[in-house]
Each structure stands twice: as structure tokens, then as C-alpha cells.
Image (cartoon, rainbow, N blue to C red; front, side, top):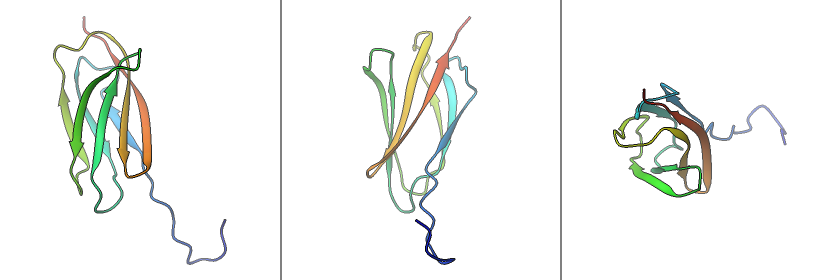
Length: 94
């Protein structure tokens, strides 16, 4: 609800994955809430967690290398506090 020009905008908590599709090596760019750490998780199509990494406060980018990951569609989730965002990651190796 907007009540005036001085309302504080909620944090824009989103991220991007590139390249996508990926060969298992990819970069995530994200914006965590200020001074809060986060967690990156990767889930396979069955919902099994296959990767987890802590994201330090003030960080905005991570390079991820998963050379043994199988071809498929994965759910990439970043959470911080009670906020959570997700994107699909497609892995395809020729």
C-alpha cells in the first residue's frame, strides 16, 4: 500500500544465471538484502538437493563449476532470511 512519497521500497531480490543453458559452468549475479548472507541451492528434477553454497553478505556474483552434473533441468534457489527466489537452469553437454 502506498501512502506517500517517502515509502520505503521493498528489496528487489532477484538474480540471473548465465549462460543458460550451461555445460555445468555458470555465473550467478544476485542482490542480497543489505548486510545479510544468503544460501544458493541447486535441486534436480526429483527435488533432491545436489549443490549448496553459502553466499557472504555484500557479495553479488559467484562462479559455479559442476563438471560432473548430468544433462537436465535444475531449480536454482537463493534464499536470505525469509526471502526466497528461484530460476530454472538447463544443463546440456554435447
